[in-house]
Image (cartoon, rainbow, N blue to C red; front, side):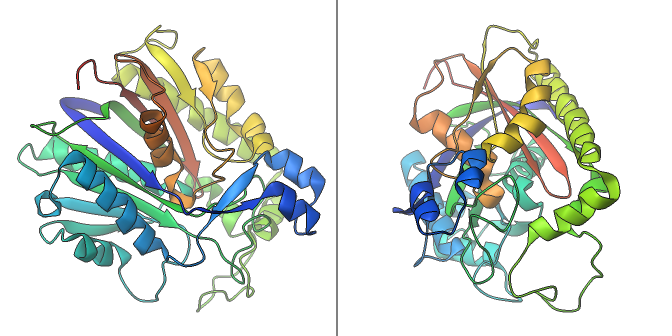
Length: 345
């Protein structure tokens, strides 16, 4: 998306204080040493006591307080998630809006699997581009991955799941502070890969109809048996090259522009990133690769949004420097966002 009006971002995250370390998981027999090496995570945040919507409220409230933004000024609240939000046949986005006091905002749920937070930013930007009078839009994500429905270390290949929430405010910069300037966001879909998370299963009439624990490894094995892993790898590489090229072009940056400081990776396992994300990314830009996920794990729908928050909290960009932040999610969709640190605060 080529932006016709300047948009700004405030970005924050809330991760619970408890941790499950890879060393402990290996020592207790919950994870093999070989798998731990392939994943490359040191630890995962764990939220035993706070449900995902509560985590989202914490992240959002801290962000709004820091920016001096009253919740009633919000025009839109988008909430993205991957796993169970705490209740059935119920709207977590409306709960979050109510708890924040965002009673003028339209609450919307975003179901884009692990790319939900990224797509939320794109939808928020499109809303504000189309309506110059619209108030700020808030994008939240929150997930937690607890037994018996999800084994955070072993439910999926290529990632281990950390609990946490993110909040990103997208706004017109009218008197509001800006952590980052949004220069471009672009998404490409690969719907032919939806079968990776379905395998050869029939569609059931009730949740968890294929087993009491979600097992993404099983459906991915079925995909590989039928199509081969090369089908996924080639498609992912093609889409990643496309989203990076389009996002950089929309931001007015050449791939080797010296202002482009970082190309930020998703928070997947190290081996999965080396195979699926690093090759097309290094082909697309010589910018320095940045991996921010070794101490968080994969944060469900919030990887890209958490990386925006880390760019800010860790002061990784000097004024005027840019970063391209890449993400992908089951379905599949791939998104690239280009942001820059403001030259003035």
